[in-house]
Image 1: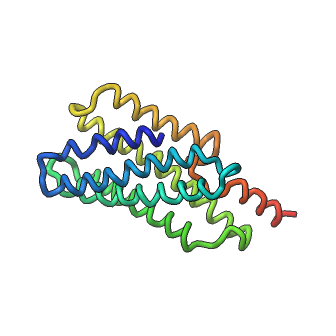
Image 2: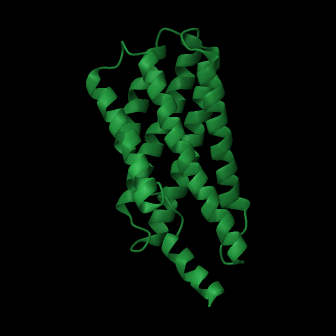
Image 3: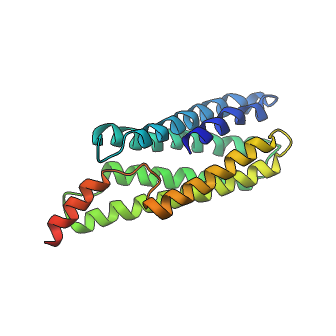
Length: 193
């Protein structure tokens, strides 16, 4: 999943190379998206039950980098003449939801406080995972609209990413970027016994 995000954001600025005003913003947004993809890979390579601190580090920062990408591309999609403003609105919503999730991670209740606090963290995590799935579907429609610059291989990779995200949420219950799932289970056990 992270690798496909990497390639998607690597390619995206080339679509705006002729529009000077927004090309730099698209490069900054793609840098955030590329780093977010790398950090998703880092999160997957550092399982929370074996390497909790690196896993949490990669997990938290991947969302911060994707917030940069979503905010920049919100601006790009509103300002470009080659895209419908619906993409700007969609990415604006995506950026807002990521910001809310980051706020919950940083300033929300600690999972050690109570079972209710744990539920808030878990539910928000699952909602942001679903948001990523919808964002991937939204990006697929973007690719379909801009089909000429993308070849069939890139479209297949992107479709594989969408199915990969869905598979991980359905079978693992997360995007692979969870905050201390094993610790949460232990804490839940403490509150329920």
